[in-house]
Image (cartoon, rainbow, N blue to C red; front, side, top):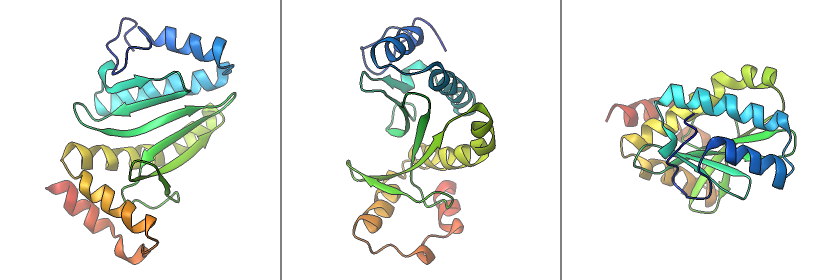
Amino acid sequence: MNENSNFKNRDFKSWEEFYSYLKNKKNIGENSISLSKKYISDLMKEFNLDDSCFSLGTSKILTYYVPEKETFGNVRFNQEEIKIAIKYTGIEGIKPKYVSGNYCMQRIKIHSQKEYLNQKELIFKLAKSAFLLIENDQSDYIKELCSKIKRKEWNKSEIKCNEIKKKLRK
C-alpha cells in the first residue's frame, strides 16, 4: 500500500489517513483495521491492484474495482469486525443478497485473523469469479443473475459451474 496514493476519490491522500479517520472519527477498533489491512494487502497481490483501484469513503466503506472498469466488492467497517462483500456470480457458498444498483452481493463477516484465514479460500474464489467476469466484459451476466434473484425467479439448477467457466473462457 502506497502512502502517497491516487485513489478513485479524493477524500484521503493515504491509507494511513483513511485508517486514522476510521479510528478517530468513526470509532473503528484496531481489530477491524488490522483485518482490513491484511485483506487489502492479499487482494492487491492476488489481482495485481494498485491504489487507483480503491475508493476510500467517509461512510465506513472501502470499495475496490477491476482496473479501469467497475466495482467487484467492498469492505464495510464495524467497531471490531469487517464485512467483505463481493458481487454475486453464481458461485455457491454464501447466499446472495440484492442491493441497490441492480446487483447482488455475497457478504462474509470476519471477526478475527483466524476466521479470515479459515474463510480466505472461499473469499478469493468468489472474488476471482467476479473479477474475471468483469475484466472480460461479462458484467451483463452478473446483472442477469441478480435480476433473476430480484424477480424471485431464480432456480439453483439454472446456475451451473460450467456456465461460469464458459463465460470466463470468452
